[in-house]
Image (cartoon, rainbow, N blue to C red; front, side):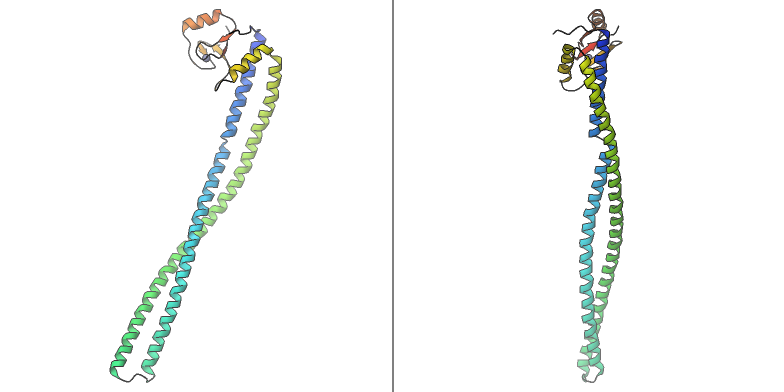
Length: 244
Ligand SMILES: [Zn+2]
């Protein structure tokens, strides 16, 4: 494969172009994984989880409220029954002993049932209070998660704006560098750059290719140093600038 034999200035420019492209690739990766973006997603997830729990708590509160009202109605009915039985006992309508005993037994049963209902009502009220306080906690949590998400959205947009601005100025820089390079050299660069991953051109530094980072054998290095100023790395096949 014929590699054009460029001047030292052209090789320097080629490495500058590589530096520009490496920086652009890095910025694009940063845009993809902006920490503010990830924090924002975490804040939104938290808000979502709190909202779901809030729904569950609201449903439970409705249920407890209905339970309380039902128990209160039953206590009312039982209390009226007890009062009526007691009135019967003392208004002279019940006269014989057997009937009186039966009314008294009825009153005892009703009183026991009232007490049982009142106990259940107390439990329901306690559960309601716990749910109310959990609801207040969740609402406060949601308010702060929402505020945090708004804050992070602004930070994310600001961070992205910086990256996008730098990318834009690098694109202009790249156009200038590409224009100054001989066409054949640029084409060769673009061909290698189109391969997946990594840089298109590296530099022999010591006995290492900076494109792949692989340490070359002494034999390879000796051959490279004796060869043309621009060649290909025997390890990664990318362009390699020999800078003795
Ligand atoms: Zn290499």
